[in-house]
Amino acid sequence: MITIFANNNANYPALGYSGAPCIITQSIIAQPNQSASWQTNKQLILCLGIFSGVIATVFGLLGAWLILPLAGIEITALSGALYVVCRKQNLRHVLHFSGDQLVIEKGINHPEQVWQSSKQSTSIIVERQAHPWDPIKISLTCFNGAVVEQISVGDFLNKEDSQQLLEVLRQQGLIVRNDSVSGQIDL
View (tube, rainbow, N blue to C red):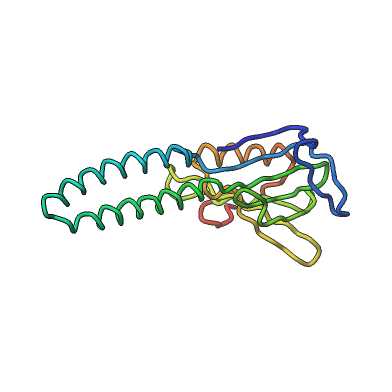
């Protein structure tokens, strides 16, 4: 899912090259599609836990006591799997555009990785997949002096969202340096 915010510098100020706050003209937030929130998952775990507990208790009273710990292990495994999936759905890629600056932040619940670059020294690399149903892979290449960094952006997006992200990046003036199938340059 792609969310675009314009002129939101009061809500989310970014730091410029000098460390001073800069005015954000547009922010793009890319996040995975979320089928259920953690609250919904907890309700599901509770309902299945009660149902499984009742069945395990009945069988335990009938003499099949071994089902009791297995029911507990089953609910614990389900809870762990749902927690891991829900946590991964909280991953965010945030791109802040401020005049000539681009700030890229990645993280869960807060920025864990941050990159800064100028828009003139940043280009887009698009890798189109061989199958038409697969989403495109978008990377930003930042040239900061002698350091060249390639940062993948929105690798969890579906096909429509990745196309939308590419269009928004183009509208910001970033140049597509490579737009081809499997990274091969089309001539």
